[in-house]
Each structure stands twice: as structure tokens, then as C-alpha cells.
Image (cartoon, rainbow, N blue to C red; front, side):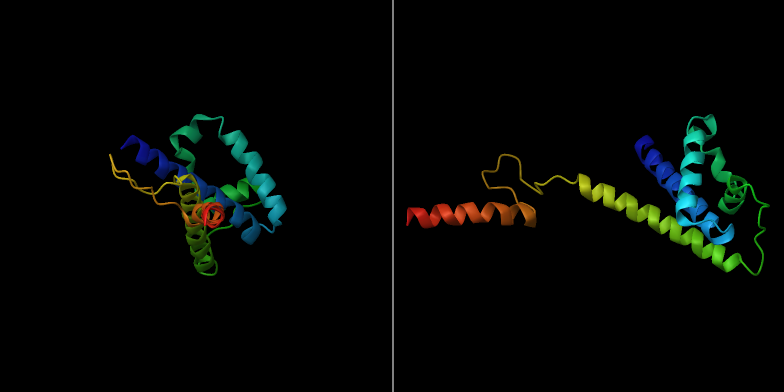
Length: 144
């Protein structure tokens, strides 16, 4: 259970970081490079604090955090920008999920299944199967 909570907190922090970066670009007129640099610097400072470990910083709206990072007056969420802000938050959460899914799939083992005590060859991923097939074909043709 503790491990699941850690993954969830990490995903929330990743989504929050992405939302702050997007707010810097969309609402505070920062270029993608500037936004990334500002967020990276802020993240490095924040990660050394107890607020980072506790996740307490997640209680502030990303648009407010972005304004503080940018050193600008905080833009209030209103009828004119509410839909854009909601879309930005949803996109940030989707990006965090995709990043997590990519990390998980990169860690999957090459051998997909093999029953205990079985003498069968384990199933290989398609890339491994292709790389293993060529030498086996050459060996078979050499024996013939």
C-alpha cells in the first residue's frame, strides 16, 4: 500500500510541475525555455524542503505558483480563463500519466512468461525474436 501511495504522490507532483510550467507559458508570457528553467530552479529549491516530502505545496493552485515563480501579479481564475485553465490542468495530468506509463513499459522484462518447471522456451518480445531468428535460420541452412 505504501508503494502505491508513493507512485500516486510522484504522479501528482509530476502533473503539478507540468501544470506550473504550462501556466508560466499560457498566463505569464514565458517562453517554453524560460518556463522550463524557472520550474527546474524552483523544483530544485523546493525538493530540499519538508514541503516537498509532505506534498503540502500541492495545495496551491498551479497558476498561483507560476505567478510567484514568474515574479508577476497572480492572475485570478475567472469566467474568461477558467476553461483554458481546466484544459491545461487536464493536459498536465494526462502528460504525467503518459510519462509514468512510458517508464513502466521501459522496465518490463524481455521474457514475458514461462511456467515454473517448464522446458518450453519463454516468449520473447518481437524485437528479440527478430534478432534471434536470423542466426537460427543461417544455422539451419548451413546444416542442410
